[in-house]
Image 1 (cartoon, protein in one colour):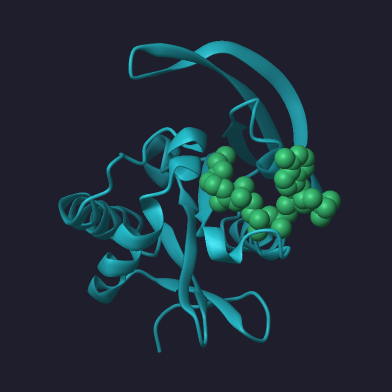
Image 2: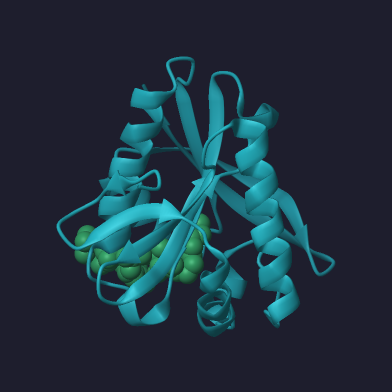
Length: 178
Ligand SMILES: CC(C)(COP(=O)(O)OP(=O)(O)OC[C@H]1O[C@@H](n2cnc3c(N)ncnc32)[C@H](O)[C@@H]1OP(=O)(O)O)[C@@H](O)C(=O)NCCC(=O)NCCS
C-alpha cells in the first residue's frame, strides 16, 4: 500500500505515478492555473509533465518520503496536487506549501479540506516544523480564503517579490503556526 493521507471517504492524498502524466497535461493547460502560480509553465506539454515527475522523484529521494502528493478521488482519479516547496531541503522549522485543483472540481470545498488536513499532517509528522507558509498573488481571493479557512493568517504584503516573464508581481504571505 503506497503512503496515503486520508482526506474524506472519497479523496486521499497519494504519490504521483507515471500514469498521472496525461492528467497533468490535461488539467494544467489552464490560464487560471498559469496566472495564479509561479512555477507551472504554459503551455504545459508532455515534456513539462515528465520534468515534473522527475522533480517529484528527486524530492522523494531527498526527503525519504513524499514531498508532492496527488489529490486523488476514488472514481474521478487525479483532481489536483499539493506539496512542499522543500525549503532548506525539507529540514528545519519552516516549510512552504503550494497547490492547485483542476477546474472541474473547484468550488466544492475540496481544497479547504486538503490544506487543513495536509498542514495538520505536516505538523504531526515533522516535530521540528513550527511554521507553514503560503504565498498568494493578491488577485487570488479564492486561495486566500482557502488558507484562512484552513487556519492560516495573513502576515504581510510583499511588493514586487516575484518576477514572472519580466514583470514584477506582489505577493501576500500567509502562515500557520504550530
Ligand atoms: C484556489 C483553489 C486552490 C481553490 O480550490 P477550491 O477547492 O475551489 O476552494 P474551496 O472550494 O475549498 O474554497 C474556495 C473559497 O473561496 C471563495 N471564493 C472563490 N472565488 C472567490 C473570489 N473570486 N473572491 C472571493 N472568494 C472566492 C469561495 O466562496 C470559497 O469560500 P467559502 O467557502 O467561504 O464560500 C483553486 O481555485 C485552484 O486550484 N485555482 C488555480 C490554482 C491556484 O490558484 N493555486 C493556488 C496558488 S496560491
